[in-house]
Image (cartoon, rainbow, N blue to C red):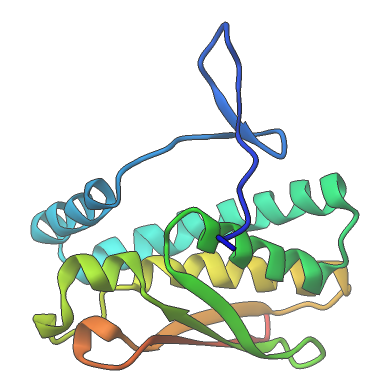
Length: 177
């Protein structure tokens, strides 16, 4: 039995692809990896990391809000659903391996990361930081729905492109300033 299918609806008049009512764009993996490499070369990995973090944090929060309404999911179920959808779209196999909703902490593992595979294990550095903001945004949604203040912070602590068996991300909640 194959992996579960992602529902894709294509509007015959506009060509817009939608999944669960949200407009989508279908891209080859090498496009995203090559874009990351080019932007890193132009502005540096740390500047790109911060840009990605901010934009993907907001995007994940917006996605979770919309999907929770569409599917009637609890906040934690919504976060898990978000990772399932990313997995189904080819980003890798994403899984929350630990989550403490009250503390605002979590560990997320990514196996077969599209970015680590695109760079290769000999790269010798973390390259999957593209996920950090997304995971923070998912946790931000969980905290928001629990009425908790604080800012979720996510960091990649292991990466297959640095020779690790999988990519691992740690989330923690910092008090708001």
